[in-house]
Image (cartoon, rainbow, N blue to C red; front, side, top):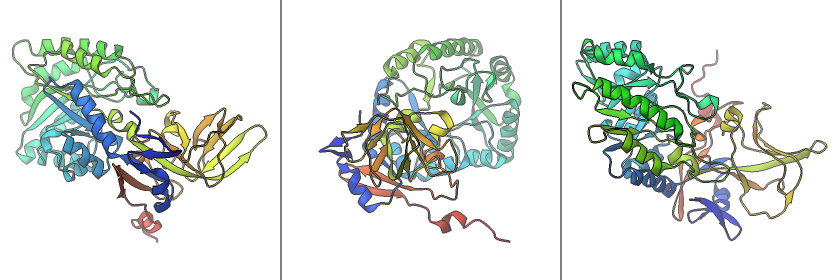
Length: 416
């Protein structure tokens, strides 16, 4: 579905004109559709409606408290990768029993905080980490539920920077070591090791890599559960691909849900999925202003007030985001054009195209499908402020993060 579209020549989200927001909020700013999050979540929920399932939203995709609140009310849990994400999730009233803590480098303090808050599961990525968690749980006199993250040595067909399932990646534990952990699980007296987890990457557009990893994992499950039901939780990650260029979900989610049901004994397992981008990608747009236009020979540069510090994905992943004028423009100019930001880096490029709308200085542009990994990856690079975030709900809009002031940026610095 499109949550940002033209009505009467003006770009709107739900019932709100983006141009009207920009009259009150200085650019650049992010704006999100509340109902986009709700609809995306329920599409996914309905695909798995006959399974015992935890949908644990990957908080790193977009961790704004108001967005976490929206998803919590729809019934979502969360997958977190830091104590900060865990704290925000608890502030958003997400039940500790709906929280999974993943990541390869959890600190002692983070592990202690997670165990003390009785979260559902910690996904462990090394034997060393497993031992550390056991010691911390023993010190706290508590027992923590554990999932062992597999490294299946199966890579999703995706960008090299978001592949996580091969042995050359830092994530997970090889299959032979996982079996050994379960055979010797009694030595970890303060851990309840009952889960298997995996995640082979993001932006996976076809189902074949999942077929391969499901088959390999199910063989391990049968081996470990041969004499008793040891593994009770199966966390199958996320990574469902979306099509930024054509603005559709693309991934065959119903076929994927059927594959889960046919691959595993779902009557005996609690299934956990960890969608992030799939729930948030098309919920947001980054609104920016054209500052300057210049030409170098047969090349045009449109310079905006938003850059890679606000939206890192194009610089980091060579990713595509469609960019459109906020007030509809029919004419285009057929000249190679780069839309670039103000950051002092050659990689601060938002879009390269062979033609673009004939925009003027002062016009507003919308960088679409930036709800995932936009704001959450933003930074203060070049001492630029984190920008305002706006939530649209039907015919109203509200600020859900204020724009930083210069004083906010330097408040922690100590001048000697």
